[in-house]
Length: 305
Ligand SMILES: Nc1nc(=O)c2c([nH]1)NC[C@@H]1CN(c3ccc(C(=O)N[C@@H](CCC(=O)O)C(=O)O)cc3)CN21
Ligand SMILES: CC(C)C(=O)C(=O)O
Ligand SMILES: [Mg+2]
Image (cartoon, rainbow, N blue to C red; front, side, top):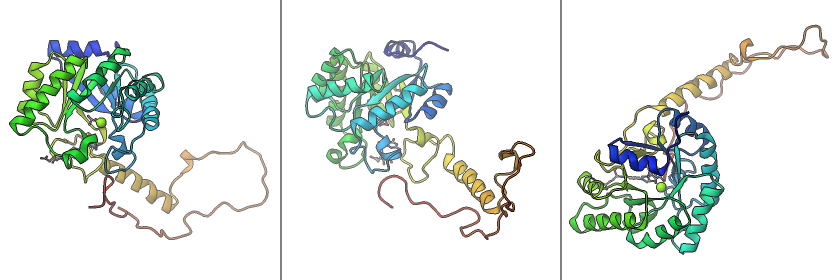
């Protein structure tokens, strides 16, 4: 096993110009696969509210749910650093809440650090969590927990005033002791400037190539949802297609009585005698559902189109 990735590893990556590879994971199986594929950091994102739970925002996600998923991911990971999102309203109301809830993600969930959304207004919160020896990753730009304030999932920092604000927020978070920063949904030039101005690593999503690392939602890069295609997502696979094909083949064999065959069935010990009974007839009924393809699925995330 290679050495465990820590916040110090990530800071060194920036210094030597090695890109940080981060991806979301929500369960142990994905954690295991994504780490073996080369992930440095696994993010237990509150995006699970959308991709796992089917909500149209991240706002309904609770602390208990984040702890549950974080524990699953932590059990599936060995080398990768596990970061967990503090969900909406787990840190905004008071610094005490923030420290307690950050502590739960580490102590109960097994996370190595936590992430929270917000700028200079959360510098004291960051300071308090860091004081409790819990490393904090910041998150600026398009911050999904502020969807109502932003008026939707809209790129942030296109104008000069807002860009300056985001740069000031980045400097404030670094000052407060954040060890890294996610930059989401900002122009690439702004992300480059921030990356150059900070000594802590920046990790981009929809923030251009000049960040010190990149993060994507695993279901997005794997092509799980054909209806979700924002500009920043690149699909490296078509798992929606692969799953549809594989599950469709299984259903077709079940309907034909072709699965399970002998290879996938058990035999009794020799010479046993059971009560009278004919072997079950295979495929006596005609398939009642579409034989191939199946129905077109509606959007998985958010409201129906
Ligand atoms: N599956 C998934 N992937 C994500 O990246 C993601 C989530 N869920 N849930 C939480 C947030 C929400 N995110 C989103 C959702 C939609 C857009 C979007 O529609 N963006 C437009 C931007 C339009 C503009 O301002 O120019 C786009 O076309 O990229 C962006 C980020 C990012 N996060
Ligand atoms: C998209 C990343 C940065 C995130 O915060 C999440 O997945 O919740
Ligand atoms: Mg998040």
